Length: 201
Figure 1 (tube, rainbow, N blue to C red):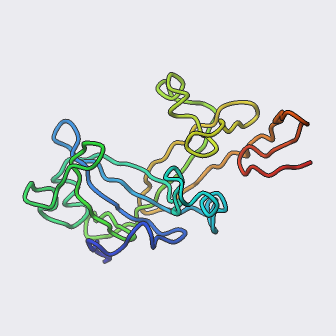
Figure 2: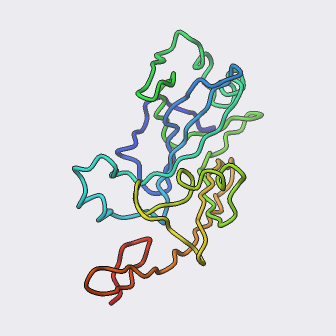
């Protein structure tokens, strides 16, 4: 049976199809929220956007996608096989967003249930059908080209990304193909892929 090892990984060293349980965060109702990160196939390779914007803090070298799962502390401890990890005597601290968090950095975490261990993976599903919250908060929830960039569209509609974790199975990721948009400049009109920034003419 596989076990979870605290401090066995890092975001900087994370490779494609590896998962990292980055941290726990205390949330309302006495629960904790786990944050998982996975580098997906759609984001493999060295990002030219990052390389040529390395000094801009809005860009990151790691293209890991995130998913969150809340749970009862006792159940989180049992499923991770880490008794007492949610106790207040651990190295909890307040991060720059004001949340009380505990660094975990567990590479390829597993959920333990009835004596068996099951891989935990991040699943990404892109859709044009936003939730009530996403539709009411387009500026925060619709996919963009870069943190403050233009919106990425699919068939003329906003793209929303929903991330979840799956246990004991391969993720069934869904990626929507970005529309090719028309960008008007002072001197001419060019076609640009809104996802990659590639100029077609």
